[in-house]
Every structure is written in C-alpha cells, then in structure tokens.
Length: 342
Ligand SMILES: [Zn+2]
Image 1 (cartoon, protein in one colour):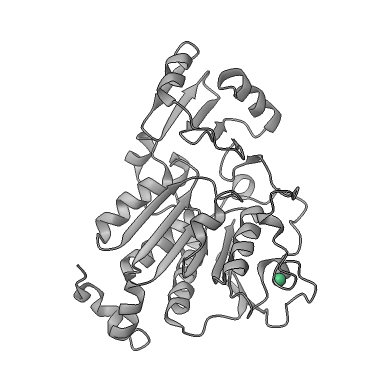
Image 2 (tube, protein in one colour; image 1 turned 180 degrees about the horizontal axis):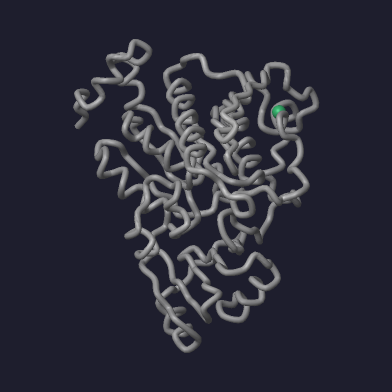
C-alpha cells in the first residue's frame, strides 16, 4: 500500500509531480556494490520511492566501512552481516513499501545477466574496472542505461551511459589502467566525496527513470581543492568500440581470458577466491572440522574462521571465500587449500 503523502515534498517539485512519482513507484533499479557510493545512492532511491531495488554485494560489513558507508552501524559489524543484508534491513525500516532484494554474491559473468536484465537503471557502486566492463556489456546487450561513479582520496567522478546514445564505458576507458596503486586501500577516501558522488548518481538515476535530460559530461569533483571539471563526452564514441559498435561482449564471454578468479578487494588486505562452477558449502560440517584449527564464528550466510590473530577466512554458502589479513594471492591460495580445500 503506497501513501503518496510521504513523497509530498518531491511531488511538489515541478520536475516530478504526481505522475513522476507514480512512475518511480513502478521503477526497478539494480545497485552493484553496496559500499560508500551504493549505500548513499540506495538511501536516496528508497526514500524517493523507487518501487523495486536489488542490492548486489559480495562483502561483509567491516569496522573500517563505518567512516563513510552510511547505512551501516557497529551492530552490523559485530554480527558479521553481509552488506547487502545490513543495507536491506536499514532501508526497510526507512521505507517498508519499497521491495528490496539483497543478493549476497559477487557479480560475474555467470550471474550478471540473470541479476541485471529487466532493470530500468543500473548503478555502479563498485570499486573496480572489471565489474564496470561487465555492467557495460549487460547494459548494451539489454539496452539498460547505467550511472558510473567512482571516488578515491578527495576526488570523484560520475557519468551517465545510455546504450546507443552516449559513448559506452569502453569508449571512455578502453583499457584497465596499468598501476593499481590508487585505491581507497592505498591512499584512502574522504566521506564527503562518496556522499556527493552517490547523491549525483541517485539524481541521474531518477532523471533516467522519469525520462528527463541527464548530464552529458564526465563530471569530476575534488572536494579538497573545491574544484569541479566537466568533460563533454558527446564526441567520445570510439567508432571501433568492441562493445557498443561491434556488440562483442568480451566480459560475458566464458571463453575470454579477461576474467579473474582471484582478486584483491579495495578497502583492506583481502583476497577473494571465486569459482566459476557453483559449489554449495555445508557450513555446519565445515565449522565442525575447522574448530580443531582455530576460532570459528558465523551465521546462516557465512562462516568466519581465524587460524591466528592475523588471518581470518570467510566462507559463504555459495562457496565463495574471502581471505582477510593478506593481499598476497599466493598466500591466500595456500591458506585456502590448507584449511578449506576444494
Ligand atoms: Zn563503446
């Protein structure tokens, strides 16, 4: 049951009105990554009454997230809650009329089409190029516009990508930049910049849902220097673009070599181990086994195992594993085979 009264202040805004509100109530948005950008954006969209929101995130709430990830609190940390679940809980208490679906998973080529097809808009709340290329492929294949956003240090950027109309993400960023040094892991990030970029993403998403004109720039902001820079992307289309011109979806292609099985996560020393084939874990049995080797905690979504004070290994029900306490992929691999095994 929807009471339009709760949206009265935005219905009064002439760009939205009652018709716009009714449109929002019927709209569907998928948010990939429920970190700093994702929580800010989800908060706005849920309060605005976007009817259906899917939150996709592979990680668990950590104490170091609370500085900027606005939907989480200390209790979420102590309960080891997956971010998608913690965000859904909070958002439901803000607006129980919005349907929210928490997908505790890593977006990858095996599930991207299933998770994203059918949505009206996709929000990029990720922190890595590979997932953005994947979103870009789904966006073009299914004709879904998306809003790219990124923030690190005191700087952030966002742009709207409309398949067939604007340049796509591969037109704008044809290659993954070589050095991986500049991440929130290595140089940090300020919470006002993620708040600003996430808010812009929510605004552009609402404009897309209402059919209103969206920004045609790659907007860049530095809140430490208080500087703003708009790069016009109208002429940015690559006439040879493999994605939006040739419809060659490398990031959805099982045979392509671009996929990573092991990846480091932004924000702390963590290696993720992901398997193409599904491998459901019996967490109860695993827990019994690991109790011999160290401290085991968990809930119905995951098991956390700490063999020592430095390392903790999180095993999710779908088989995915996070090794916290190292960014060394080889070390993570060996810890995995030592304690969890295939
Ligand atoms: Zn393109």
